[in-house]
Image (cartoon, rainbow, N blue to C red):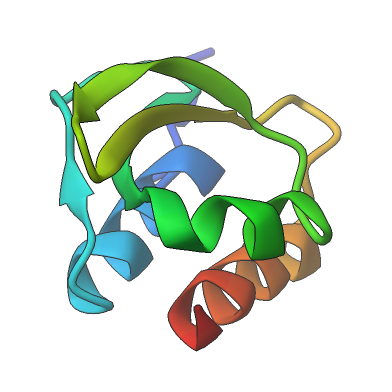
Length: 88
């Protein structure tokens, strides 16, 4: 029996949503990890709503953060994250 692959993963949907909202990806990945360049002034507000890891300083005004999905990530989680990021 042939295994069917999902056309779009949760991470793919988040990457697309981030690009559509004007965020820059630090580098592309094909995994559940998403690295984005975030303005430092938005980090405090984001940390109140979203769990993320700080990866490294991008420049004096921006930081690279890491978001990750898991097998437990739902479409509702993905949609909520995208909506939250668009409001920043």
